Image 1 (spheres, rainbow, N blue to C red):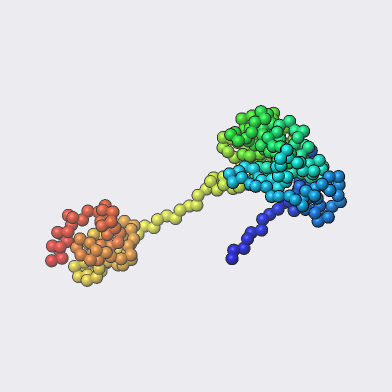
Image 2: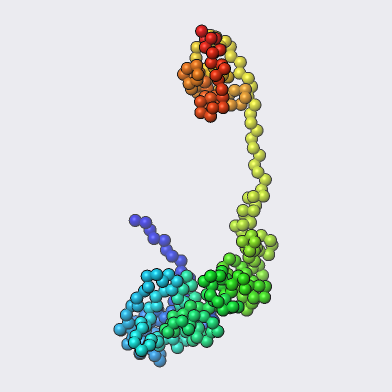
Length: 304
């Protein structure tokens, strides 16, 4: 069986404590906080008694099959006469995750409700929300149809068309630093034309710099082709009984011609088997570049 690779987890995921990107205060994940109340690991606060009663009769919500953008909430199901809110929404020690699958940002419910824009008005359950990182902070529109870049240090995001020098500093294809934060020295800049990150020294990062060095390095000197001398045979061709090429006169199985070509044997030719070397056999029979029709009669007359 194949060994499963251990997935890397950050300290926030290990401790189940996350930072709210609006107020920048730490809090426990709501699901983990409920487990700690059931196990008695934390002291009860106001509203925890009603939470205990609710946990006994909690049902798992149904998940939509075609809903790929949002996660099914593990909190209170809908009832007649409205939705009963989770009592943990007013607890400052509890944060809730954004409904978008690929988003790993957490917020307090009160911080989301007091924010200027977002998807808080679309859901009756306050624990279900789409965080401000999926809305442009300039035009307050979503990033469903336009390319959106997110700030790495807060909940701000903006469309690429709305981004300018005053609104922030773009770092990569998906992230930027908004105007609320100072840009540290050495932060790369995104070049939209070349679609690369440019550092202060004009390079493109360590990997891109290595690629540029490989492209600009001098090529290795190629070895010069050896010049072969003409081979002189002591036995004349009329008395030679072995295999030889009727076109170039090669006799050895591994020979070096004056033209620099090499052969490793003999193949069939228009004069019979093993009458052409491999090089000229390929030129005559395979590629049809060598025409030997004019020499067939002469060669047969000489052999007779």
